Length: 76
Image (cartoon, rainbow, N blue to C red; front, side, top):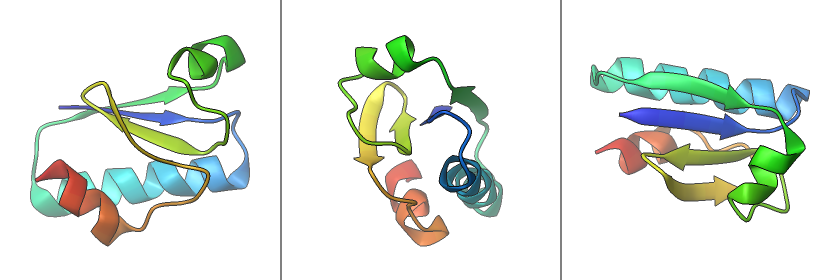
């Protein structure tokens, strides 16, 4: 499973990455966490507000920090 956190490195982006990491570990899923910080790459996903989270190529949320519980729902 590939989890991508899209954002420029702001505190909210870092928190989202931490939440995604925690959710995947709690579910004991095999995953790769990638932080996408290049604005052109972020725009390539059609994202206008960061932070955003993409799981296996599908945008799951943007413009807010998703909770660990929300991310766990998306990972199942």
